[in-house]
Image (cartoon, rainbow, N blue to C red):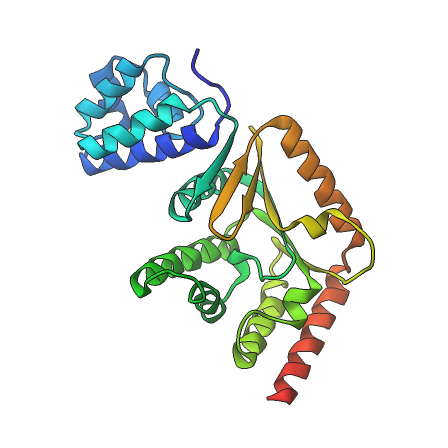
Length: 279
């Protein structure tokens, strides 16, 4: 039976099929006619909401839309693992495709980062500094930077509620030069005034809480909740209900321990002033 839940592999497969179709200059109704399916089938498949019952039907879709052999191999790999609710992804490129698809239908997004500014709130200077400390080439950094800035623009101009909780370490000991940090912190103060954006700081404290196990993003839509966990050289996307519930509980606890939005804005401004005076 085709899946009715948008798993990570189905979301990436849907995005791949959409790119192939658009490159061929075909509309969804045209593809539907070619494969003898309804327009609704094609639309839901491209959103990752509906899987393929048979591999042959996927192969037919790939053939009529002119997929390359490499694209066909990729699509078949995604199809074979399509029902897995969780997904560990080596590298960074493919996970952004999946996360962006989930973000596009979200009504609210919660992000916790203990030691870095969350990606959608990063200025281009800050993002470049963080990206440049790895093994990526300059061309790869430029591509990633463009994508990150496009995502940032979507968050700042859209209507999706974005709730960010940032560890005090990321504010007091920023992962960038002091002058870049000052501009990043000033930018946070401005962004926090947007109606759909909420920014809070989680202060240093003794004892264990879920924040010590690292950052995560909780993406919620009308159809599902998804957790994205990004590590140094890989990322994990979770849709399993039990896993997601654990992160929902962790988010609630982190919220309770975080400084309020008004006090957070004041704290960030004070630290920016301190860093500026130290220059």
